Amino acid sequence: MKALKMRQISLKWFVALAFLSLGILLVVGYTMLSLNYFVNGMDTAIGRNMEKVAQSYLTDPATAAQLFDDYPVTSRWGEQPQTIQRAFAQPPAREGVLYKELDQPNFLGRPSAVFFALRFTTPGGDRFMSYQIIAGQVPRLLTQHRGSFRTLMWISLGSALTLGLLIWLVMRRVSRPITALGNWARALNERTLNNPAPNFNYPELNDFAELVRTSLSSAQRGLEREHRFLRHTSHELRTPISVVRNNVELLSKLQEASGQQIDLRQLQAIERIDRASQTMQHLTETLLWLSRDNLDTLPARPVQLDMLVQELVEQMRYLLRGKDVDVQITTDPHSIQLAEAPARIVLGNLIRNAFQHCSEGDVSIVQQQNCVRVSNSVSPEVDEHREDLGFGLGLQLTTQLTDKLGWRYQNQQQEQRQIAELWLQPLQR
Image (tube, rainbow, N blue to C red; front, side, top):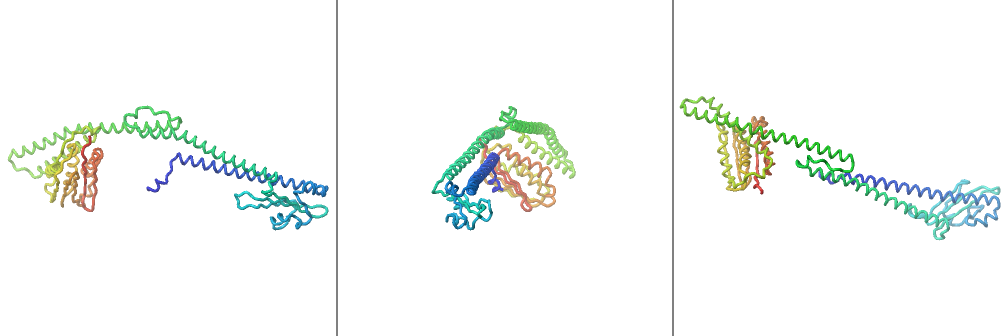
């Protein structure tokens, strides 16, 4: 996956390379086409000259030989110049067809010599005609050919440079508003969402920016509604939870004061109500802390973490009544600058979940420096109901609260043990 990301190319460079490749392909193609037309034109011109020489030879051979001494005409192929005979392995076989050979080191190199041969028919029999262009002799046709080829190469190079410059200007013109759109989108927050989107020069980019702003505004309004709901619901729940808690305590005191034998089933029902109300109280407090807009204003003070862990363990021991569970606590004296209320909530949730979902076995609580590790045995029948209030919502809210506070937290199951680890960080001012 990492290698795939490294091979990715940005859209801007992809479009630029695509246009540049297409431009270079067109320039090279048209250059080769122009060069081909140029060479074919030269061949046609020489062929036309040789045709005129042949016609002049048919009319007056003596005069043609004097006027066109560069085009030797012979009755036998062996009488042609040695350079012509070496250039062509065999004499021209077909009558009226122009034959050409190049003395060229490679395909891209300039030929050092060009040889032409022609066979034509006269009343006296077949005749052979030849013509040669040698670089050292620099005849007029070669000079024109060399200058035209150089001009063609300069035109091709200039076209490629011009195309590259135009692509660079176009990409610069297009990439600036796209970059500005990206920077504007990254800088959006709840304070700037209500501001109108700036002008990005192109209607498509302006429409996309408005779509982004509208979508984020809708999401922000949804988050605000969720926060308001959490705050209001949590505040409204505190009163009935307090009433339930107070009446449970009152009911326990009334039973103690009456001096009568307490029915075991009534006692178990009261304990279940007490545990459920405490769970609701912890969850409500967690929701209230999650709904706070700014955690930087939390009051911080030195907290003795080992004593806090032991205190929370004693408060939660009622969850182990009637269970064959062994609790092992290992603490290390350590003081840390913390907001105590959210620390109590998070640690309380972890300890309560361990006690609540361990029916037999042991619970291990280890505190070293600012790290607290809570692990407990998990039986198969308890593991089937992991999505209840404790393992589901409670730990999910704990994860959200630790993320908001910037504390490192992980919770995982290894074999038949549930292990939760929390690293509390000092509150930064």
